[in-house]
Image 1: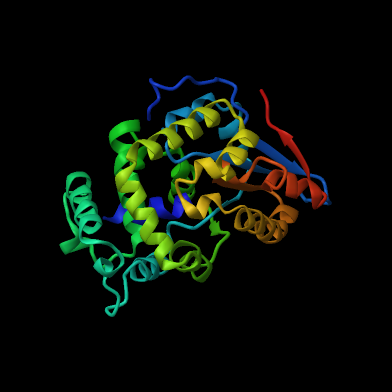
Image 2 (image 1 turned 135 degrees about the vertical axis):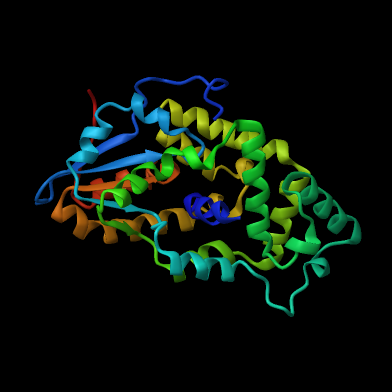
Length: 294
């Protein structure tokens, strides 16, 4: 889901600070189950600069062996992105200030002005979940050197589009709008925005921990960390039931592409590891999942 936020926010790494393993296991080969040819899944992290790809054994060769790219949400689907932007707006009948005390509303307004350069007079029509992610995004740029233009997350998708290789999204726009803007009760979204503004250091610590685990290829640890109640910086990411159900849905949608073979799949690493992670669910569906080494 973070990739979708990344695409939306583009329209409006702490590489030196965090230790890195040169053999982080984030690339997997998918075979068996009567597939015509192998496919590959790359676990990504939007905070990581694309130069990190040079440390992943055989990632470019695996990509060159494929004839299609699959990702969470296809960034070239401009109509869908326009629909998402529209869905990020509050109905005219809903006023954000009605959900906060005067003091809380002023606190959020000041935080947005300091970090985004605009206050609620200009951003007040946005849903709180969207404002929270805009705020979080700016925190990552300031404190973790996040550069969305150089993110590894969208690198292969961009290369594919430049090379006329088809790119497919696993989520449709209706599901995405529901996940981003409508799944959580509105008052929860309001609470999330307030917490992000009040406790920015918690957001930074969370992302730094995830980033460190990713650089060492600790996908299972990432999955457990994200789902732990003490680490609920974003409601959408800490909901275990949705996390598991989404992976099951992705297995069904991936299966035809995997059967055909030669698919290069890039997904946020938090969805891949753990007992209910995508890799485990692919194994349960009969596919052979093997780490790609040198």
